[in-house]
Image (cartoon, rainbow, N blue to C red; front, side, top):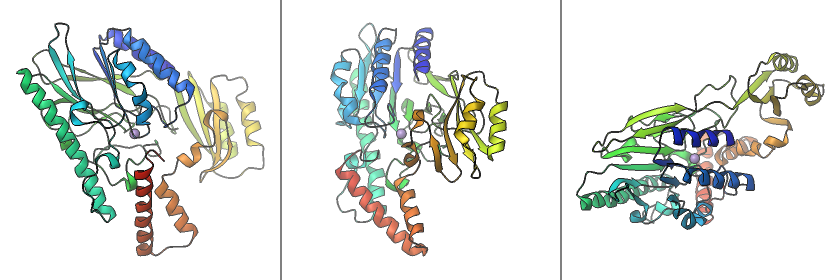
Length: 390
Ligand SMILES: [Mn+2]
């Protein structure tokens, strides 16, 4: 991550970037460790010393909105605008001014919207109508923010570009299996259409999905995660990038380009019998730091960790971070990727389904009833104790 952040600082300088948008997730947990916090603040400290005049940070579903907001007033002094928790619509509109102190850009800086923040109505008895209320709430919130932004633009009597941010799942978005994109809302039925971002927006910066992509229109962009979040069976399948959008004065249509992020570390999955894995590790050619996840397709009587460690003894670029038996039965896990990630691989719904299997509940109607009830409970917990499993 540090390599990426240093690279980004250099890119900001070389491309003369005026504004940096980071649309969550900033951290992958509500309690970021000290090292992660240090990276965050050091990075911001580096950015504000460059030509980049403004930074806008909006939260994602993994972030603690309260944690991000805690330093918001301080960071504001450096033109780092942080929006963790949802705010009143007018407080999510940020106006940026040029050197002559004339307004040049309006940003609808909308963070991740928790269901309890925005759900409308109180008579939603069943799960499906709650889901609908949630989607309605998302649209309503965005529309209120747009209304404020348009009013401001009208007052300026100038056709200033308006852009938006969001942390959500747009229907049709591309997800890579096992890439850790968690359910945003209970049951994950909540996906919104790209009409949430109307045509008057010059650009929309989205977070949440890990692969870079456009959401139906060229100017609605997910930049994707800057580094790999998961192991894959071949080296860097999907390119990682940042998006640069450029608005020339008087033009509401931006030029958009992807800039590929250099690869600083490969995350490689090696799968096979013990002998096959040993052979693959021995023949592995790597140019950069490579983290391996070993999946054994059958049990072995041998001391897998010891033998594999011997294979990589003189190969400082390679690190084995976990050895697992197929079907997620973890045999050994290294401290860099501790065992806690195993539970993280499953959504609460998935665990509940496993529980139904375990109890031989096979009748599909019965399963549906139990699952809906379980979702109700999850929703209740989530509403009362925000962030309990975000
Ligand atoms: Mn997310």
